[in-house]
Image (cartoon, rainbow, N blue to C red; front, side, top):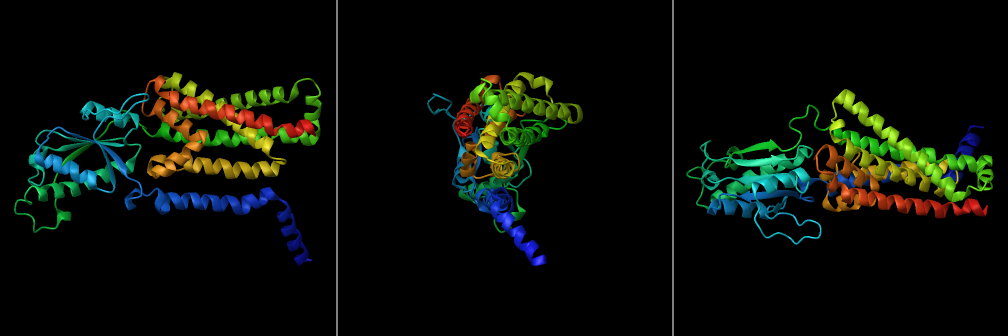
Length: 394
């Protein structure tokens, strides 16, 4: 009898595709994603992903230029010495300035900026504890980049000091015990906030859960099909297009309400500055909710049973959020993974929320994110309408 129970259970599992996905595909997919992130593809310390650092050499001495050259030759860094090219603009040939470098950190172009003030060259390799200090400006949302640049700066300073004639009698000491160049590190974002990273976490969690919610609520189409309600609705004159439009509007308003509740809670409990950034919040919330609702309709029209929907939702939603920044910051991933993550609208949405709450950029800066998310929305709606044809033909 026990053997019969075991055999029947395996037979049921073999017939249930959704259960097979949950039992075998989802764990393997997550293992693969995190193995790539932590096993080499996203670990900066193994040289697979270089840290971008904007370098401003105000000293222009022989030693400061040697320091910049040593930083450029380091496999862990990608040194930027010119302002970034903006949309429809030519790359600038002008050297970086303090103001430009600071703006690059605030805009997320680079996580770290290194300023070498006048007199820095004379301080390299002096080991006196005085002299001019280098300045390291960091984006605190990336806790790894600043520390990594600080460590690699010391190694580059040792090389620059050696190229300039040694270590002033200290060359016999262990380099690990010496500090060849002192520097000061400052955060250019979030210093005046009591909980500077709340917006970062609120955006990631909100985007992930509205995707789950939209997928689950979209499953009402499957229930209506099984109960015969869908057939009666289609014969009422509304049509499949009208039905999908109504479902999409409902799911959009539901997702908007969920995001609002999340951010209101963050404002009341964790002092998230919601009211200060209300216009940007409204724009990002509406477009993100619209995309999530259309995404839910795609999953619902693609699935034939609730079990299939649950399996697809778990696999696709969790995978997209794993590489999209909700579970693990994208800035700690390799450049390749960061580009791959843009195949999901959630990565664009998260970037948009960070521009609003963390980087405090103007509304015009949201154009790339809003445009991409609206494109995803249109694509999802067209795909859902095409997949829904099977119900009209039934």
